[in-house]
Length: 92
Image (cartoon, rainbow, N blue to C red; front, side, top):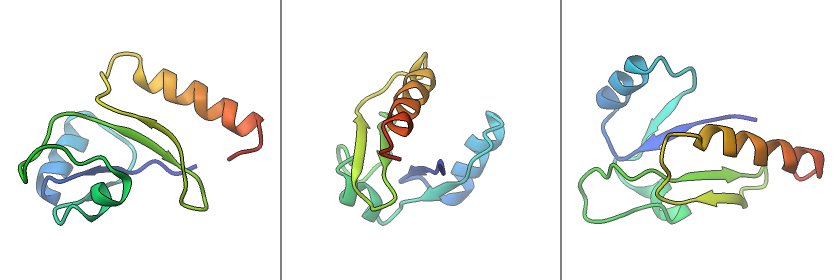
């Protein structure tokens, strides 16, 4: 499984965020909003949004799980639990 964070923020801002929280996965800048458009996670106008969504995408590109407007507390544990369930079911 690969984790990639995306944001409409520029690369320099994403690097600062990743470093501040010592995150160990890559980030992709979606300044042209193509990723967000493809997965339906864009919100508001063309400015950066602080709302967060999590999308678990299967190897074939289909969305297996989608969480909208997540709160950080406990969210990673929820996603990990659901990811393990999907793995046990043979879906990922």
